Image (cartoon, rainbow, N blue to C red; front, side):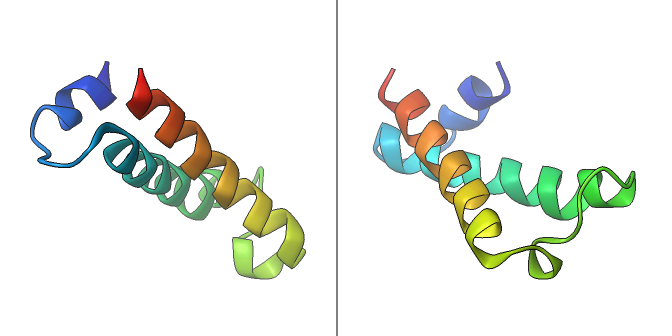
Amino acid sequence: MLYGRVRNHLNLPGPVAGALFGLVVWGLNIVGIAQMIGIRNAPWKEDEAKAITTLLAHVAFGAVVGLI
């Protein structure tokens, strides 16, 4: 729902727009909300592999959503 509204305003190919959206969701969730409410540590305080995996999972998911 939110992605569809954002996608309509971007002049980018679907997978690129989706990947950027996934990156924004990661930033808002993992860096912002999850850290503030105490359910996750900041990415720079976690194991590097875990932080990178979480980031890439959000970007990959967004890219796939952009293909649909």
